[in-house]
Length: 413
Image (cartoon, rainbow, N blue to C red; front, side, top):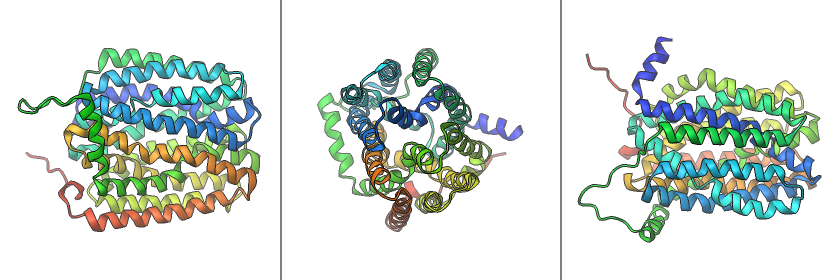
């Protein structure tokens, strides 16, 4: 208890308000998100290939939405974008749940994908605004713990509800988004840093042109490419794995939900410890280590058949996740100049948006036409390449101060 109180006192109060509101939002999202592939294949009687195309459309248009949102958050602030995203999320969730024809998902995927992710970069930029550099890795780790607390509640309850009514999942998620929007409006103020008096105001067009500066940061682009390879594999846990377990091993949604709950429990119990152990170590080496855990865990899916071994594979993956997730977000924010955090975090979204765009469709082709285990063999190979890429980044950038291990904080008497 004393340790938790110490951690609480180390971080600003505004950070904890964001954490609390994020937890409520995550509970609603985890009720629905893990079962979305199951919803599409079951509700519309289509294969994973067709479902993958829809999921890919959500992601590719979400990529454009994130780019727009990143620039707008640097120009107008984080808070407005986040509030808009929450309200639109509620409306779009209900729309998808009420659709009766599969063909209607195509135009919805365009609109929803474009606008529902517009607030994504603002969330990451807000955390970077609130926390100093030496606290960001641990701060993102705390958000991981809180997010996984929601996974204990969401998938287990969501699995039970999905067996009775998918529509109920959409309604509950929309309601939670509305509640979170109200809380965010009442309790969270703007965090965007004030421009210096001698800094000329940037036009909206110039703000968008700033993306060329981000893309000319070739070290950052290399960092993104390594993350995309890893992301292609990681996102299969939330899209293709549920369908694979159902069709190949006869595991129902509730059993899949329990596997995700197992992952959440591991994060809650050990994320604080893991983050404190790794925060003073070279970040790119830590990324490589975590990716190797992904390689082992995802490869296991192709070799095992007993349920407890699937649970073990999830635990191995979760160890990698506890290492990677807070580190990759902190490193991405450290790449960014203060005045460009929104745009850098928007481009950082490529590490999951592009995998989410092409991953489900590619996985669907394998699951529907080839040996399903091939999906996990390829995943293991991609993780190995990603780990080598992070080691290469360490050799190139590891000596720079912004990517050096965070020195231990010394308490002053």
